[in-house]
Image (cartoon, rainbow, N blue to C red; front, side, top):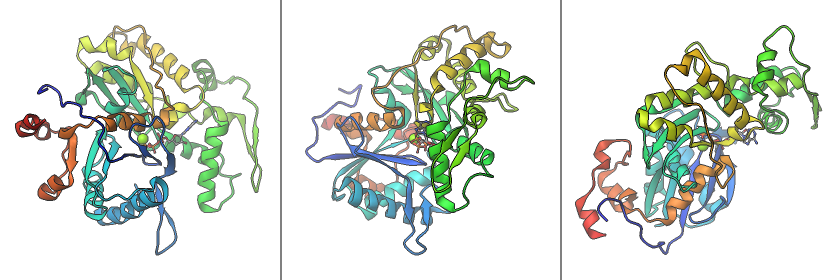
Length: 377
Ligand SMILES: Nc1ncnc2c1ncn2[C@@H]1O[C@H](COP(=O)(O)OP(=O)(O)OP(=O)(O)O)[C@@H](O)[C@H]1O
Ligand SMILES: [Mg+2]
């Protein structure tokens, strides 16, 4: 029992699981296989009536107000539970800024008076949906692509990677290309671009992508008409090129596929093959049509290139298929963790009010086992 944290029976109070992403928040109950809902991570400002994204805060005070509004909306309009004394699981990236994590805990404990909070690292919990303990987890969501390898249940933090190549970058690219044809009235434009991206754009093959850069590009796919107040014609070239920036290497030779290979290079030799053969893609942007086959061919091409052929002796890469859609795989991991009561990883209201700090699982200080807790189990 002392080697791991032990699993107790399901607690009698229902556990609520939130995955607060920079674009979308997934919410639901622990032990369920799909979230009850997915909503935008934004609130309507009570004073100005303007829509504000929770992640575009100015300072801690501003964030506190935004989170109070947003969590209130989640508890009372969507999840519909009284937050007092319940257990909450937050699925969050290990790379979340401390300011955000601390303010979130303050809102939950001081404003909503919840009973306990567990911060579940998204890359780690996503692996639990597969029933394996080793996987290289790449999350391509809205704000950035982040990668953390998990080996035998332990995040290999020294190999983490992050790049601002995700849904937002693709969104901006489409916006630039369609500037002249888009209507110019605020938030509706953003919604339209998002819809155009998901419904009409796709990831092209590596062969076509190479030809696109030559003087004789291949014939563009057909244009499509996007209906609305004003019908927008989305040219085939925009549909095909929207996701190209994920694969274009910048001045430092960095792109989504190089993140995977760089992370593998940073891991010890005996971990490399298992990681290359257990890649898990999470985050909504990986659901784009053609994303997986393109990533696979990019990786195989890079492995043969001068850049990696000396450093890595890997010839195959394999991907896992999670029992969920990629945009809520991390949430599902949190829902699985939620039914296992892990007392050492839960921050109770009493402990929080006494110490006024949130444990950081990436820090050694917070990873020392407490004898008193283990003995009491
Ligand atoms: N089928 C799809 N094809 C292409 N893009 C998609 C698809 N479904 C969702 N997306 C995109 O995925 C992004 C949202 O993904 P996700 O919900 O994982 O982000 P998030 O968790 O809010 O962000 P982050 O993890 O970066 O904080 C949006 O940009 C959305 O447009
Ligand atoms: Mg996310």
